[in-house]
Amino acid sequence: MNNLSLDFFLFVLMVSFGVFQLAASRGRLKGLSLFRKRLTGYVFCAVMVGVACWWFFRIDRNIPDTEGAPAGGQLFALMLLALIATTVLTIIASSIIKARWGSREPYDASQRGLEALKKRTYLQQITRSLRKR
Image 1 (cartoon, rainbow, N blue to C red):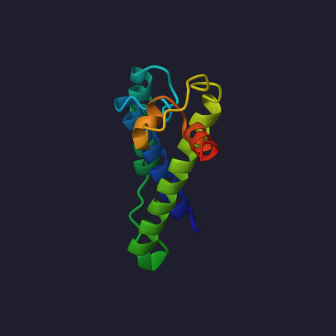
Image 2 (tube, one colour; image 1 turned 90 degrees about the vertical axis):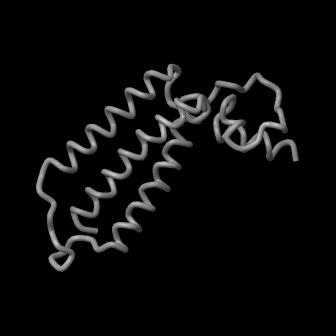
Image 3 (cartoon, rainbow, N blue to C red; image 1 turned 180 degrees about the horizontal axis):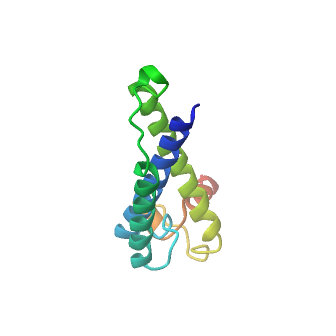
């Protein structure tokens, strides 16, 4: 992986991590959000996206793929890997930060999908649903 590929991967990772936190704050998904207050999630998104765009676009990266820049398929693969990494990073970070949060409430099997992430972290929901089977 060359330097431009790594830079693109990190750019997508930073932007998508900020956008994930925006979506978690907007949707009141406390189990995915890293912050207690919604406004903090909004500010975090603005900062992450702003810093990522400034960092990535501050230098000229207009290099043709014939001279070593990643081609379209490689860019797609890097973007997909960055989105998967962002999803895993968000799940792990929110579960570590809120490890004790939401553990006192009884399990409610009717809460499925994103609705369950309003009261529990992803890993809490997975362990509770596996335990009840």
